Structures are given as structure tokens and as C-alpha cells.
Length: 192
Ligand SMILES: [Zn+2]
Ligand SMILES: [Zn+2]
Image 1: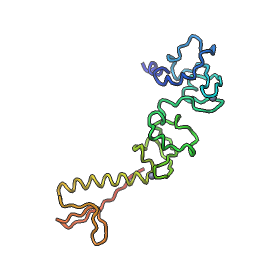
Image 2: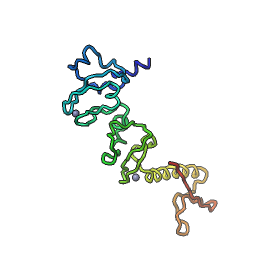
Image 3: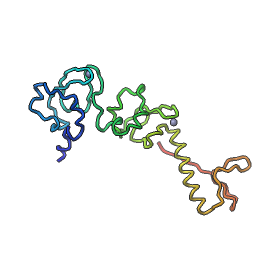
């Protein structure tokens, strides 16, 4: 069963745009039925520059790059570009030396990502949960204000007079509960 799921036709039929019908090695073969890990040497043609070349199915499937023009012929099915297009927009094309078409969408390896604030940081796609906020600084701010609002919401249920971000004697407190004359300060720490 597993073998069936690993057919090119199931996993990423788009790479067959480069399948060279005329190459003798490809005669009588239905490429959609070939296992992506097959070592069968096959003929390929680059749709960008027209170069003909021979490579094993396995080699081409996992690294679909033209040996002449070096372009990625088809983005990998599990790539950042295909599965996480919003995050791919933050992928630094100048600082990374591999195309987002080849980077696994949930890779644990580190790549350069450019945040909306302009910061460029090395992050692993797997650790980035918010597709739009990719630097740790912005993420921390985002999470802090989110948790702060959530905590305030619950405090207010018990103390309806609680005030958020109030100035007391010139100092900003996160929450002020006047009934009890209590000031609350939040302190958040995030790992990674
Ligand atoms: Zn080419
Ligand atoms: Zn940022």
C-alpha cells in the first residue's frame, strides 16, 4: 500500500513536465506509476532552457534542478512555496542559498526569514507558527499583548472595576483593581 502512495502520479505529478517522451529509456513506461525512490535512469528535458539530461527518478524527484540553467524545474510538493506561500514571502531570497521551492515547509533546519519589521533572523520553518510574524522580537510583543488581554479579561470577570494599563503615580501598571487598591504587573517569558 505504501508503495502505491509513493507513485509520482500521487506524490507530485507536476514534475512530469520535465519527462522526456522521446528518450529511449522512457519508452513504454507510464511515469505516473514509477515509485519516487526508484533508481531507474530516465530522460528529462528542462522546460526552461531545453537541456536534455539523464538522471535517476530518485535523484530528479528529490532535487528537480536543471544541470544546465540550474533552475528549480518544479517546486517540491512538500516545499515552503507550495504549502506555506505566505511564509515563503518572508523567506530571504538574497541570504539563503537554496530556493524556497526545495525547502521543506516544516523543516527543522535554519533559514533566513525577513520579518515585516525589517529584521532578518535565522529560524526553522517548523518553529514559525505565525506566517506573518517571523522575528522573535515581534513575536514576543504579539504574544505578550495577547496573553495580557486574555488575563485582563479573566480578572475583569471577578473585579469589574479593574482597569488595564493605568497610570498610578506616573507609573504604568498592567492592571489596577481599585476595589482592593491592587496593582498587577505581568511578566512573560518565552522560550525559543
Ligand atoms: Zn535548464
Ligand atoms: Zn519583526
